[in-house]
Length: 400
Image 1 (cartoon, one colour):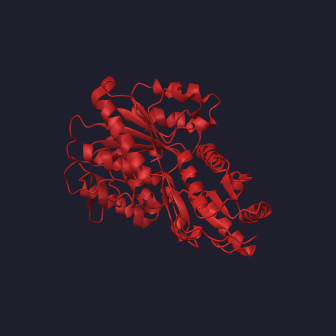
Image 2 (cartoon, rainbow, N blue to C red):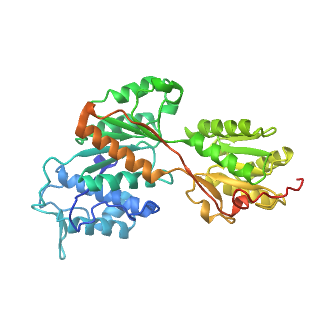
Image 3 (cartoon, rainbow, N blue to C red):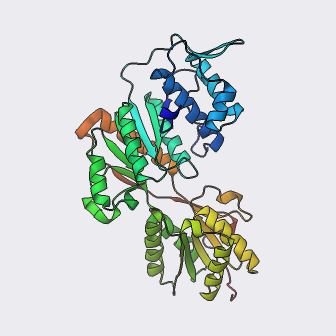
């Protein structure tokens, strides 16, 4: 198994009842759970090992207990993976003997596209993006090979090389442009890879029209802009932006917040910044004190975890949400399960993944005849209880 930890192979077919690595929920609102991702990655690793000869036809695979011990996964996950491969006729169970690679498997369709996908992690933000990619590739009968960089540049380089070695015809990449010494140079290197490349949730913002990349991104500045205007429509003129300062969206969210604040003439907007690892209950308490000092009544907070901590800190400080402090979260991964459900800016992750896959498939089919796509998708504002109502229902503020 050690040779197959970097990339996972997920196959899709236009017809059949076989589940393969299809998404858990077919609707855009569905999520891919952590146990489901572990199951799919293990299944893909095993499938790839069978295809590349790690387990030749007729050879015995590890027992369920041995594989669970080696991978750190549960017996249930391992059993599901083996059952999936049995359904695909890639392995066979022999009573009392174990699990064996089948002596002959189903034929691989000729001419099937192979799409390599690189994400920095498979938690929180990216499962929905992957779900959108998978949905589009499923309809096209494409095969998806998944890699994860874990926000490590050297791992990213190795993973891209592995994707190309796996036969990827095109790549959907979420690279670490924001951590590169020279982001423009790194972008050019990616665009010069021997196969078409579409970036997902990454672009050269500072390059303007000089950005050479083909990309699909969230309009994070636009999402923040709408949140500020929403709070203003509810009567909040003293606003704050509370955010973790690391990660590509932070600067864009700040730009959108500042733009809306300037347009609306908000007096002395407050900014609270902290790296993600610095966010804890004590830091949230400090942030609330800063908001109190600035007489803030409405805050946009990036992201859901930080907003939830801020909500709890507000309660400890004797503030009522939303009566004394209205909150809008930026992310919408688990904003709805906060103690007081959070109004949230919701990046269109599923749609972004699906559109990126469409663009890459078009590039693979049409070559240079396909126009270069540089797409930004505007997030949606999902209104819940934490901001106190909908625009037009202006509140009467009390001094904090």
